[in-house]
Image: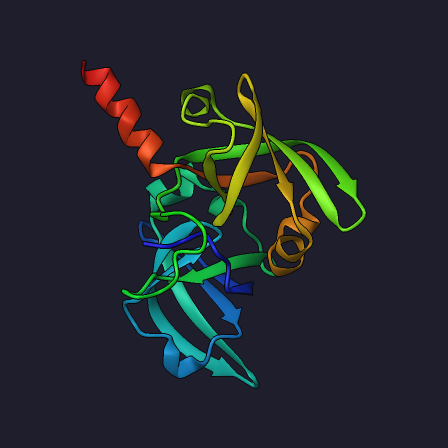
Length: 201
């Protein structure tokens, strides 16, 4: 479980594909090496992945995670390349501050940035979601974009907009996001369950 508050931006160092097996991603980070446990969950741009290896090169720690075929199919990981910047968040611990909203790290689908308006050191971003997910998005509700907890400003059909403050632009990968880019999207968990309950009535 996560909160959508990014604590580091990592760099993808290597990708290893194995025939018939998961794809391995090696990610550099600023976390202390001894604080990264094998088997720990780390949200990588919103995707909950398990650490299977860790180490240190020069001054940077790194960890390796694996992604199976289904994860690659429904997320942006299939388009990652070496050098890609990755929003990172470690799993929530009992007693930690819930600064964003409850995020599972289970990506619902891909959203596409269709408009960007920059205002000094802030940005107004508009995304388009798959139609099957847009019904779960509401004005002033929560949504996770590439693992970042955001508040929805406006909704119009299958599109929604979020306003990004200076700190979020500096502390995440959103500053470099351009029109046409795909992002991992997780809708609010409560909205998802409410929608499922209504389907059963």
